[in-house]
Length: 180
Image (cartoon, rainbow, N blue to C red; front, side, top):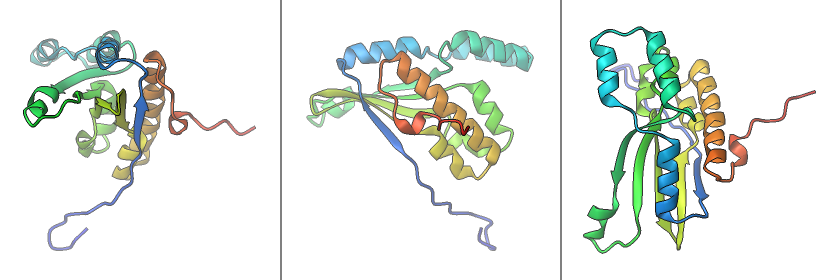
């Protein structure tokens, strides 16, 4: 932290997971969007407007996100990139869970920089790929033990989602075997 401004520069390393899907772009995108439903903004606005209890928010999120994640935003990059002659398709998403985010936000609102998680489905070398930064490696840069622990939990939830999507689960998402 500099004395003059109080600002910080924090170098950090993250691991990007880039996974072949073994499916067509359209098929995988459809399965992904079925497994990770869209966050209902209107419903959330109603909860805020009537000052719903947090337990109601928690229950609604659990019911809406069968595999722990919701889609908060989606951008199909293909149409605009095609104007430059690009043929490969790509769709970017912000995927997360506001209830899980709150368990980190209470320790440091800067988690908003990293959650929801950013991910991409894209075509490369004749295949469809899914890419996302490993949550724990991104979140641990905030220097909080509590946030890092949630990051590890997000790694496990992401591994579970990979299983649902029939994607290979990278070793970095698998918990280490328990010591005997």
